[in-house]
Length: 65
Image 1 (tube, one colour):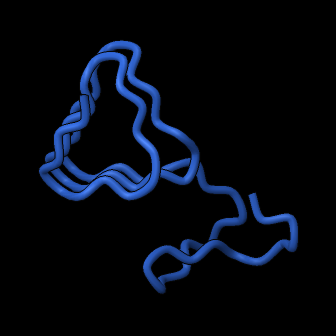
Image 2 (cartoon, one colour; image 1 turned 180 degrees about the vertical axis):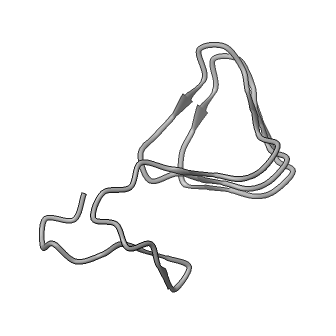
């Protein structure tokens, strides 16, 4: 959430939004009870295992356990 009412930029591109939870790529799988923190970017074909916590930038094809 931007409190200054400006739009959020991701990798230099404007989202046009003031609030942004997370960005999830194509074909991402998440296990049961997995947690993804606010502001996380998950690349295509990533796997977040059961009970794992994802935060920050997750590279495409990554596996988080």
